[in-house]
Length: 91
Image (cartoon, helix red, strand yellow):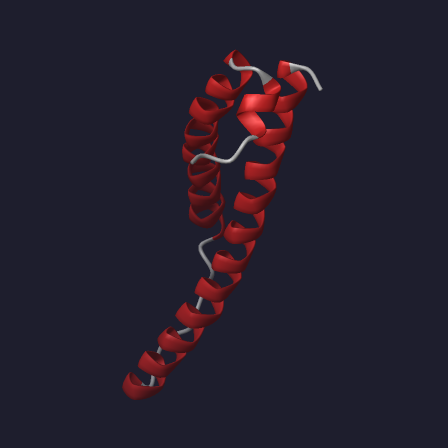
């Protein structure tokens, strides 16, 4: 495996893990916020829940941007080293 292939493997692994985490977190946040808002509206007997789609998508894109930056540093370090050393676990 070449250094470039190793870097792409690390990046893909991190992005897949991040995507699963974002999907699970977003779904859990949606369900929780919907239930909390529904409870508050039941107490005050008014209002409806509307999902902020554009804000939500913007937040997800911002999280992906931060993750891309956080993944870039280890990938760049892995690309500069020997592939056997990069895959070895730290001691």
